Image 1 (cartoon, one colour):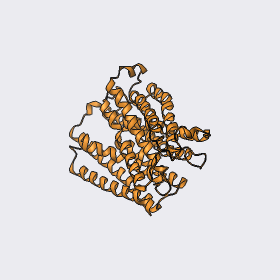
Image 2: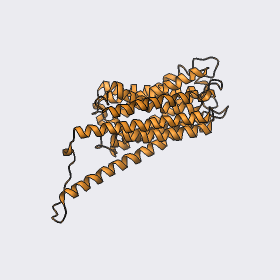
Image 3: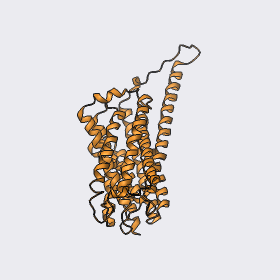
Image 4: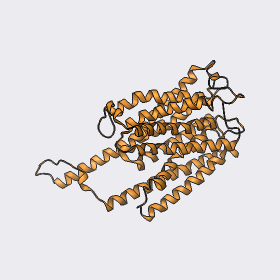
Length: 367
């Protein structure tokens, strides 16, 4: 199996992970808003498995000095397979809930809560499972990345609020008020609108919290499958079973959300066959991109000890993908092009905090 042999190579793989995890969602955006996420996700999960197979029979089989992918099946420990498979299931549920939370309350609420919570849980858990690197620099860098995520959320909310002030649309809220002469219709209407807004916000926060807990929990499952010498799964083998955990759980989780969506109307499975070739291809490419980053992450965290960045560092860098998503929105999709100057200043602060935090995390293993 091909693994990085220097710290720089392992670090570059971790940064590649961050780029992939922060970029795959562009394929969903390119597929169009009319192509439901539930339908997109079927192709996405197929792309994940396709990437795993390609990686295992290329990078996982090229090196003659290390055990190959097929060799790793000899005397394989089923409980280690179960850990990797379970990690895929947990991640998949978290990922679906994250997208549902975005649909309910928007990126400004879902991403900071879910990914921020996942970052804290994942870094702490992974560090105690395999403590590597200076804890002060590691947790300090993770804290700065977390603050950057919060600043990004504040900027997003401020830009959204400014846009609503410029383009108010009160007609978008329709409330049926009963004809009761003892009640003030305007007050009743305002109360119902406020209650509805609170219920939507609460739902979005709860779904984001659940997603964050699961997102922070999946990675240690994969790391456990790769621990214990002699019984551990090699990186590519662990990734292979992890991908099938994603694929098979998709066949259960997505039909559930198609029938009981957290946002929007139920969608029938036959709608999947109405999609264009471009929409299906974009879903597959999205899965390929995301899992390419995942395999790079697993390879980096299982490099030789002299070159190992450690699972806590590789996971923390991977969760920096939130900022990569923000960069795509800023410079490609130009979501903040009409934002006030105060919002743009917050975005500059966010970028600076992110880069400093990323630098501390990258240098932590060298101390």
